[in-house]
Image (cartoon, rainbow, N blue to C red; front, side):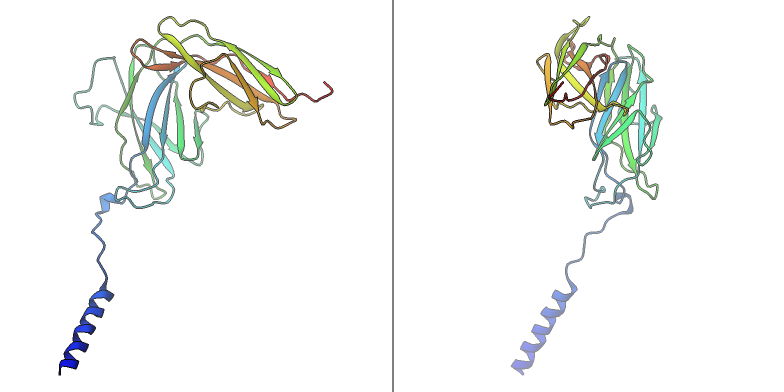
Length: 256
């Protein structure tokens, strides 16, 4: 009898183990993409430049298939006006509805990073943006927290020249003194001739010097360069100047 009781207890333990632990309940509204992260707004010349990282998980923390679209909401107001409800979307309007497979010229993707340029802005106005993503089934994801920036008078462009060498291209540039604020550095942009200038600079941080050496280039390829001065305003906000003149460079052959 004792032996039978031991067998029954063992069978019960095995049965419970086989059932496993139930997964926590996930509500349907948690199955949409999480909000895009790292949303930042910076004035770039006479435009606002938005950058953000596309989500890879849903609100429940599970990995999702790649999102297919982006919705950008925008609010336009006088500086200091403020919204009656900063987290509400009633005073926002739809600025962009992007298909990630067919991006327009003012939007560029770098892996999970998306950069969008907004040229419909005016000096002296404040602009606030919120961003969400869409799945291929047209499910709208969570909205990002709002980010704002005030459009100021665009700093003047720097002057650029490129000097081609056999193994590198040297850039030299001079920034013009800003009307307000101080020069905090320079951002370098490079494109292959015939292609659009990227919205993402070559350098990760603004350069503090007036010279840049570009190496590791392909021989026989013509490159186009541009520079923007980074100006730090009295408020501490940093803005980019209007783009400099474009300068071409191409690795020289040894006999040249």
